[in-house]
Image 1 (cartoon, rainbow, N blue to C red):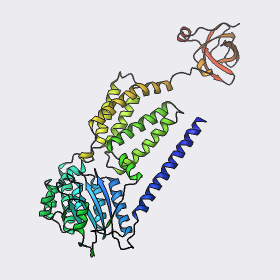
Image 2 (cartoon, rainbow, N blue to C red):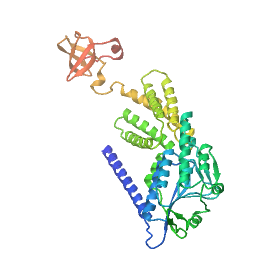
Image 3 (tube, rainbow, N blue to C red):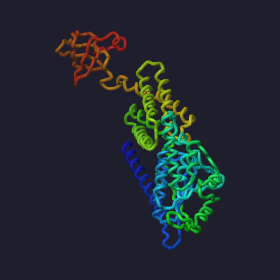
Image 4 (tube, one colour):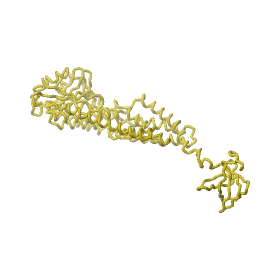
Length: 454
């Protein structure tokens, strides 16, 4: 009954979560659709902060679609990012270059940065704007791709990135030479410098100042009327917030641990349900993260090797050598797992070292004894009497049955070796209501004292 109640509660919880996600999305969609039939112009705004990843792409693309549906004058992206994934950056750039709907990337607030991936995104908008005391540049593909590259691969990625940002700058009629230097040399400039050399179009103190300067500007044959426009912010949905949280490296590391602990815990303690369910859910979320992020496969292989070494320690008298090897393999695997991410998304040693120590302790203690217990002899039932001794009360010949006495009862017995009345036999196995015996070994005699028949 407890198990059924748990499963029912889990189903109800998941159903409620799904409805919450749907309601959140519906609410956001409804609040965003503010038509301008009355003549009042509208502007939709989203804010993108932190590293650029798959969820950033989804948020920007959804915001752009909603802005088009609303008939907004312009779609504004407030941006503050140190960089992000190249694949996600390309998707965002394609969306911005591929739309005729007026788009603005506004690097704000003061002190914000459009680094690395942010440089590509800012230059891809119809209008590139920055707040005072902000920066743009440092678009080196090393920072965008993460990890180590050989000379040939490095040359290829640099050539691609240079030509890519050059094409973006040329399409938006911006400074292509500086754009290439941002990739090639990692050049970074302030908002004032960016305006002087035609990297951006506007420096705006705040959002209202930006709307005032956009007013009257012509984009894609459309003259903007933004001075007195109603602004609508499109928030992230609960799903976008959740999956953005899931795709953080430290969270993915925790999911890896939960998947390992939960599945191993269920295997070593069948029927626990909770460890197994938690492990499977964590594994599914982890696989989603692996599919969405450029995870290093060698890291996964090393973590798998670590688990094999941890489990092997339970069966091999290696005196801790396999546990030590497993700890080293796990540490290196977790370190390599995220090496293909940008520098700002690398896993910290403050997370990695405790995770390694915790995993080593888990396998050294819980898993070792849990797995060994699966192979311990039975302690209850008829199987628990196998290996114990019984006194022969009626002689037993091969092919014929006799009787033995043990556990206060007489049992019909058979044996491949002749046994005489009064001999001490050792129980081998049970077959229905018969017991198979053999002459007792010295070890069995030392460990068991046969019970005398009454």
